[in-house]
Image (cartoon, rainbow, N blue to C red; front, side):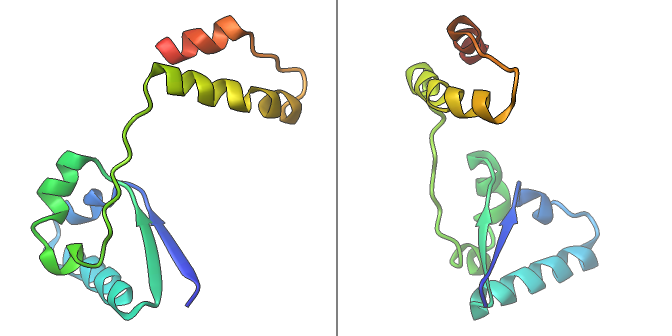
Length: 107
């Protein structure tokens, strides 16, 4: 009962061409979510959610949609500077210059 399933790009499960395979995956996932045996954290894009998840109302009602916006440049810099020291300690002989971090964010 303490199972949390992580499904990256859940929309790909709905894009299965084989109808039998699709039904099996959908049935197993949907029944386990509805029974509470499994909890899931899933990722997808807004576009793929609209195309592949929204039409399946029975499945969609078992999900709580949380939209996470991409961080802007300032937020991204805060993130990379915030983890800089821990990465340098974890991986010996690696040092990140401020210029390198700033350039990586701009890419």
